[in-house]
Amino acid sequence: MNSYMKYIGIISRCAAQYRGGRLEKYGVSGYQCTYIINICKNPGISQDRLAKTIFINKSNVTRQLSLLEQNGYVIRQTSKTDKRITEVYPTQKAIDILPVVFSVLGEWNDYITEDFTTEEKHYLLTLLERVAGKSKAYAEKFKEKNQE
Image (cartoon, rainbow, N blue to C red; front, side, top):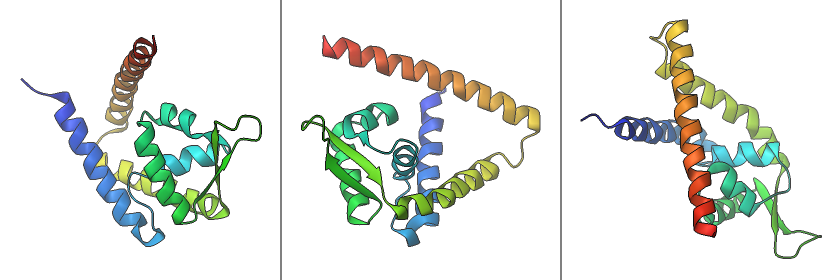
């Protein structure tokens, strides 16, 4: 039996290695791209909302944000309206690296699909969007079930 997740996992790990290699000189790991993108797109996002948005558990988000903060990419501060909430803001350093992050992501996509036709690329994207949608739906349902 073929396991789709086997291949998705391989692609994910190889992509993280590629991103990490390309971004190492900036002090950014291959796994931190998602954080930088989401924080730059949503300045002031709470740590909890970020965790839900990128489907990463809270402890891992806290750990990665600590590293990003140490490297000067984000600032965390307590919300002025709710002291229980920690908001995350991009620094100018994060804003400046964002185009580099997008470039690295585009290079990877181009590399892994360089032998595909335009139609194959479109079909692959359509299938991946469907799989991601189904995965997100499960994750949302799972969260709701565990919060009851």
